[in-house]
Image (tube, rainbow over all chains, first blue to last red; front, side):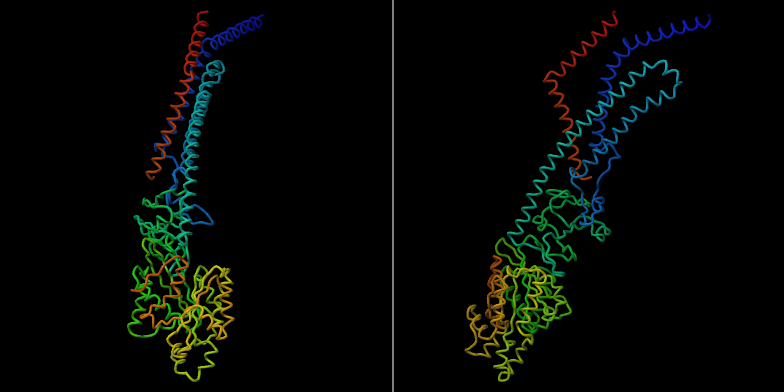
Length: 524
Length: 53
């Protein structure tokens, strides 16, 4: 009987409890839950908005910042990246989004885990009995989550749209600026030729003039190897030192010190943005190459608007001048040394151009092991071949004995003209150079001595007459080879010794430069 | 951090706030706010009726 009473009392208590719960749910919890849900959604939205603004206004100190050092140290097997700040929309916007999501993850973790912690600390009978009271808590957490998700989605959508628009505009601008840069270089036939290693670069390295510490300079952090518009800046880039640098080779060439990307030798101002003409002079040993280059350079420098472009060339020219003043002959070019390179800067009105004359020793040109290193030959559009008329077998046979004194004075090249020609042209072919696109000035040197040798029978310095004369001297094979190998060949007869008076020594180079749409000023 | 980054962030934050304000304005213009107010009013009335029963 006692058990029956207890059972009935328990059943009544359970019914009362269930009725209380039902009333609580219906009249208190349900109306409250709606209000709580609305407030929680708003709170979640405010949380997400505040988190976004904290990141964007710099109030969240755990935001990762992609710094220039990170860019420079970023692993890439192909490129060495420059020490500069990346564009905000290229990298930092992603890190800012990560910082926002990190904050929201923490907020959501607290929203769900904190109530659980509080309930766990209570005696288990309290939540068991007062479970209806947990419903608003659950609703609050869910509402808070919804609020965060909705506003985070809005922030990501707006940020994504703006980032996408910036990328679209940036890519268009980058393509346009790079295209303009390249088009200018193609139209102007621009390039940057290194006076030390002869590398021709379309994108030289540029030195930042900003306040870099010594360690930065030692680690070449002050060098920007790719200043084209890109992820480090479209119109400008900010160096790691804080200095603002112009992008595009055209603008950088006017303001920054260019350096060879391989050996870091300084390039003349305007390198890679101005016309760049490389004229290698080749021929047999003692054909008169150095004499020709020396006389040409000195004659060109007498013209207005022509000057040496760098210190190295100025020193070489000073050496040439002292030889001429002493009345001496050009020393034999040392085959063990790198070729002599003289760079002249021409100014034709607003147009500027660099003309590089390369003079390598005849032995180096003939030797396959040595001429392999003469990389400047590969990038030349114009060449000058020097032929010593005293090395022509026909003349030797005819006058070698009777005019031995003249032959001694001429110090004729011992190598056959054809051998000297073939050695260099084969080297060009071996390195994949299409000589069919190059122009060749075929220069017969020692005109003064040839006039003395032949008197009235000497050939006139005229293209057709010279060609005919060479054919008469049994050099038809060499003439045919040259005219077959090169796009255009023109014959010249010059005397370096008469250069001061006549200025005719510059004629081959004047013709070569005309092909580059450059006019060489007349010597003053 | 360079000025351009700070400027970009400021522009981004202004754009987000403007987008939210714009969304709110558009919602108000299309009667969404009024509908929410009407729903709230109906809900309060229903709760009052429930209590009064």
